[in-house]
Length: 157
Image 1 (cartoon, one colour):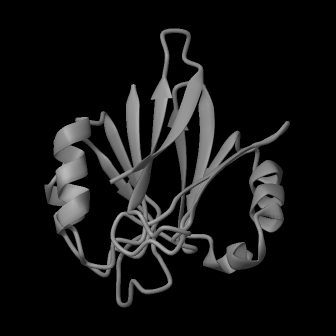
Image 2: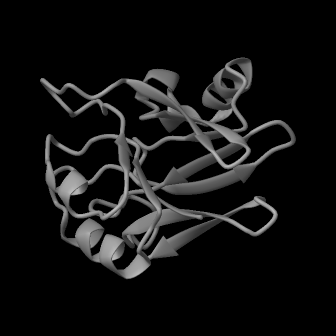
């Protein structure tokens, strides 16, 4: 199974649409700040799960989601309510308290894969407005192998 993880597209969807077409994911998880754009739903030929970001005004989207992907409990949130700009310890602590194996979040526009003893934290960065050094648009892939073990990769455009 291949899961495409994106965040912070802010209505600039060209890179997202192209990435969906190239990757052919089984599931898309958007960690918020779509800017109210429906293109993130329409571009994929698979289920798309989206949470509310701090810039998704007047939206019907849920603030958080609990998903089951293979054998993993996955908690999805935008991250701004957990002060992720200051570090990931708060969000990791909250994920463990919720019984999650993996937390997917955005908000910082900086990619991160943090594999800890009790929790895996993944931020795909931003495929539209990157902020990390070099400012290359990024996304993450979560791939389950035949034994249903998750492997994570940050990809750059």
